[in-house]
Structures are given as C-alpha cells and as structure tokens.
Amino acid sequence: MTPVSTFAILLGGALEIDDRVRALIDGARAIAADGGMAHAPALGLTPELWVGDFDSTSPELTEAFAATQRLPFAAEKNFTDGELAIEQAIDRGAQRLVLVGAFGGDRTDHALSHLLQAVTLAERGLDVVLTSGVEEAVPLLPGSLELDLPAGSLFSVIAFTALGGLSLSGVKYPLDAADIAFGASRTISNVAEGRMTASLLSGRALVVARPHDFSGA
Image (cartoon, rainbow, N blue to C red):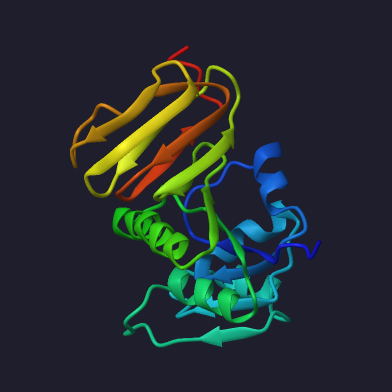
C-alpha cells in the first residue's frame, strides 16, 4: 500500500505538545507559515519550506532557521500565510494535512479561518486534522468518520450550516439521524466513550475534541 503523504503545517496559534500531537505528525514533512516556525524545535521538525510575509518572525527565529528555504510574500496579499503554506503542501503532493497551532493565538479571525478552511479542504478530498494539543478538530461532511478519543473526554459538533441526519454513537448522548438547526447548541459538550462514530446526511461541520478534558464525565 502506498503511504499517505502527510504534511504538518506549522501555524502561529497555541500549542501544547503531547503524545497525540507527536502521533499526528509522525513521519510528516513540514512547512512553516511565518511565526509558526517557532513550533518546529519543540516538535523536532525541520520544515522544508518557510512561507509568509515574515511580519510575525523574530530575528532569533530568522537566525535559527537561516538555512531553510523561504518563499516570501508581500504583506498586502489576498491570502493568509497559513493558506499559502497549505497550498504549497498540496502542490508537493499532500494527501493529509495536520494543521499544528491552528487554535488560539492573538488572532481570532485567523483561527476561525483555519477552521473554515479545514472544511473546504476536506471537500477537496484531503484528510485534515487541526490541533493545539489541548484541542483537536476534524471536518464532518456527508458520510461517516470514526475518532479514537479517550473515554470520558469532551467533544462538540460545530455546525457551519444546518445539519441533516446527524448520528453519533459511542458517546454519552447519542443521536440518530437528527436535524440540527444552524446556530443550535444541542451538539455542544458531548462525551466520548472511546472510539466514536459520527455520520451526516447533509451539511458541513467540525468535530472539536478536548482529549484531556474529562469535566463532562
């Protein structure tokens, strides 16, 4: 079987490294987006490309990774540094994308853009996961997916449209082909019982998990 080409995209959000993060990036190639390069040393990654306008890059980081190939862009551009890095990974054959540092940080607009873009990338046929170490997210489109979460850990389904026929099993509060209105909070703060299954007939959503949060158990 041909191995899936995985790229870790290093973004500028928060990151707490744990075994789940390490497992997600195991064997991955890496591309850094501007200040996301700061995560590379702790992750043990040497990005093959450094993309961005470099307005979030410290002189110390520039010096530490002086040998890394850079792809500079003007600050006045139509895309975020993260999106540019993702497209570079796709051009290099990425089939699976791990967006590292996709949550938190100083820019809520950037973090929200990462969440929305993950869904559009999944619609393009890419396998996508976002992580901060504290939170993980995967797109949920029509079809089904399985997630291996610690028993008792919290997760939510965040709808970006009205959802038709949402089913959840292996969870504390199961659903069977439920229709969820856009903006409804019914799918917030569920609890995984271990390996869980989510399926959807229509709509777009993200499953956002907190693997170390057992406050709902």
